[in-house]
Image (cartoon, rainbow, N blue to C red; front, side):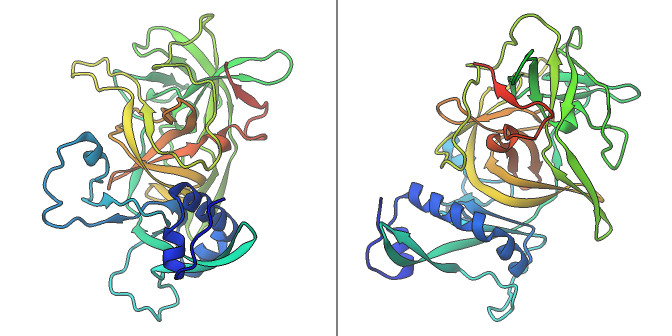
Length: 364
């Protein structure tokens, strides 16, 4: 195992390989995330890369695709330093260091490397929460169409094909709860009991709603809080295997693995406009151990282990698979903020026991 050299806590941390820093910071946040959120009044805490305002020279339009991916709509550029990232309701400039809610530049802790206890200083970053929205959409010529009695049609995407475990396995498709099973007419996102899934041209029914992940509903400070996974499955009615985008997804990525590259498998546009390239390249930003997202004026969604990245997703992409370079499932896209940060539910949460009434597994 890599061992930091005998230097200052900051130098000791920076001397570690990136994968080790990511793993150690993730373990620290998983142990102390609840205390950190309460201490600094944060709505989310995770591990990833900080974003900084570019200089005038750096604000010039980037030429390469990779450089464009590093920039958010707010003009911030992702740096390559691994840190503990705090998401706050509102970022306050000029907060004094003696303020109890002031997030220090570094958080010092003691870690053991090959039996040697070493003090390290983990960098921090504070990001103000921007409004956002789930990325389902209506009347779009792409993806899948979902119809429920008395509801408007909703468009989204299929993440992957799955099968129930045990006797008499059923072939299902995985997508977002707000695509397959959430009322489009309700301001409080009431679930529906019945829904049919059609192909992109709305000509053939390919699946029907089978089960949804549990979402707990609570009133918190006058707002409705939804806590759980935005996920649902529909039972396939077609005999043939679905034609997925690119290679079929048959493996899950390892939990909390440092994702060096990401892709979002979005549906191909069949409308009059020029089709987008799929998959979309994505730039990993962080894994939020816990985050509270605004999904409407008076409704919040609480998500654990959310994958955060930058990608050119748009309405209708909810439910798209997020994969790594090995085509392993990292998560399922469901949300994007106005400043360009995308969110996906992690695959290890989606496939954990107890999420659905019957456990599911990837086909393959």
